[in-house]
Structures are given as structure tokens and as C-alpha cells.
Length: 443
Image (tube, rainbow, N blue to C red; front, side):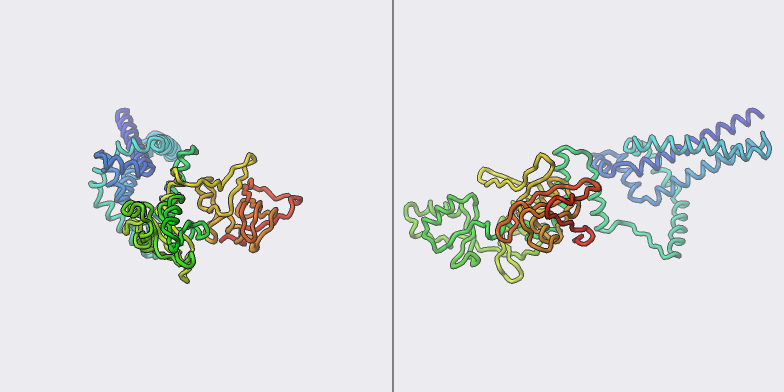
């Protein structure tokens, strides 16, 4: 009798160990890093390849694990109940319920799953070969279960999708970027770059153009000597050429092409035909997204395009460097003119030029200001205020306080931006301040 009891107890313990294995395996495979497994698989790790294979058919994997786990748990509970009934009579049912609940919960569920969460990658690599065999052996049973489950769900009008839509995949990728740990400068810059790459298809060139008021251009009717001097004095290598009016652009002059032409005719600039060495202007609509424009730059082997609106009027220019700066941040070389557009104050506020883009502010400070209706800080204030504000006025919207510091005619030139603390309310004696509710101007 004692031998039978010991054998039964031993079988129960073995079943509990198997239950712990299944619980830990399930948790490790669901918590393991998918990117790391793909990297290891590309490096030749066979176990990582098995993990990826198991992930590719999650229904079979989960079915096999649940089948094994439920089988051993039910068997262990049945053996324990039969053993304790033989020892204590009908009261053994209650004893078996309490004892097996405690053992299964602590040693077969919580303990292995806790360990698996903290060692997910290593444990997933260890259990993958065993689970691969189980999935193959139990396939007939799990397949039958899947057919039954799908059929039952279909009766209720529920269709099972095998893959995520592109929108869901992008959301998942954005979530992974946001979870990229660390608050250091380098980590924040990496997060900003990755977000910017995903945003390229959603940003139009009109949001990053150099406005025509700021574009350096040359009147092609000027004497050749003056054109050469203007090119040499300019910090840019490509300059639009116009005649009669700046909007009438006839070509784009490259400084290197001009120098070659000057070298070919030393001392005789009067015969230099500047328009002949310029390339034809490339006009693009303002609604072109950055991803398409980047691909167009690569396909045409060009770095410079002129942006026009729906009426054909010139709005400004966009360059390959502008798009690259949207990804990596500002790129300055020895010829760039550095303009301070953002200044961090000691009180935590930010003084920005009105022309600073919202995307740059969001990227630099990891804010969440909307940029659907306005591209610049000044544009956002105008959109939310619904009027042209005076110097000294302040507005509160989207969790920030915007104070107008400078204005030239109808253009806002300088703004002080301060994030509000949670629950902060503007002071009543703070001067002419207007609170714009987020719900009214959510964009």
C-alpha cells in the first residue's frame, strides 16, 4: 500500500514538473524579443530559427502547449483526488482541491512564469527544440481543435485574420520605437530618427520648403561677371536663375558647372552664356510627400526641386538635404549660415522663432504638438487663436502656453512656449491670456 502511495505521489510530482515546463515555455515564447530572434537566426542560430518557425504558426504552438498543460494538470488532479479519497474518504475531495490548487498555482504557474518573464530569450531558445517535436506529434489533434474553434467562431460571424494590416504593423513598429529604453541624448536622437523615417510618407514638401523669400536666386540678365561674383558670395551650390521677375525661373545654376565654364574661357566672361550651362528647373507640387520625393531625387539623380502651388505659383525650393535633415536632424557644414531658432530658458520655457517647424519641436523635445493644420509654431498659434495676436498675448492649448514675444506686421516672429504641469491653470492676473480648449481645436 505504501509503495502504491509513493508511486502515485511521484507521478503527481512529475506531472507538476511537466505543467511547470509548459507554463514557462508558453510565457517565454510570447515574451521573447522577436527582433533579437530574427537577428540570431540570420547569424545562423538554429534554435532561433526554430523559435521563428514556431511563431509563424502560433495556433499550432499554442494548441500543443495548452493541450499538454491541461492534460498533465487534469491527470495530476485526478490522481491526487483518487489517492486522498482512499486515505480520507469523501473528505479527500476537498483536501485534493485545496492541495492541488496550491501546488499548481505556485509551482506550476506563478513560479515558472515569473522565471520565464525575466529570462524569456534564453528560455525560449532552450525549449524550442522540444516544442517543435511536440507540435509535430500533436498536429492531428491540434488541427482538429483549430477546425472546431474556427467553425464555432464563424457561427458568430467572427473571421480570424492571419496577418496584421499595414496600418496595424506600423502602429506596432511605432510602439516598439516609443519603448526604446533610455533618456540619454543619443537614445532620444535615435527615437527621433526612427519616428521621422516612418513619418516621411505623411509629410508634404510644403512643410519643409525654404520659402521663396529666403531663396537666393540670380537675375540671368545681369552681366556674367556679376553672376559669377554672386555665385562665389553665396553659401549655396545651386541657385535658381530668373528673368523679369523672381517667379519666372528659367533654370538652376550649379556653382561647379559655372566654374568649369569660367575655366574654359579665362579672362573673357563676356562670351559666357550662363543660361546655357544651367539645368532645366524641376517643378513639383506642394502636396508631394517626402517619401515619394526622396525616391524621385534618387531616380533622377538630382538634389534640387522648385515647389509650386495648385496655381503654378512658386512657393519655394526643397533639396535632398532638407529631406535627409528630416530624418537625422540639422546638417550644418562650413558654408551654412547658423540661425538660432530655438533657445531653452532657465525656467524651462522655450523661445522659438515663428518659422520653426512643429516637427522640429516635437522631435527635439519629444512633444506631441499636432502638425496636421499648421507646419510652423506661428502657424499653430494662428490656427488655434483664429486671429492675429498682439505682442504680449498668451494662449493655452494642447497642454502648452504660447506667449507672443515678437511680431512684424502680420507675421509672428518670436514665441515663448512653456509646457504646463499636470492640472496647471493660468493665473487670472497674468495679463491678456486666452485659453483655447483642446476639445474645440483638436485639429
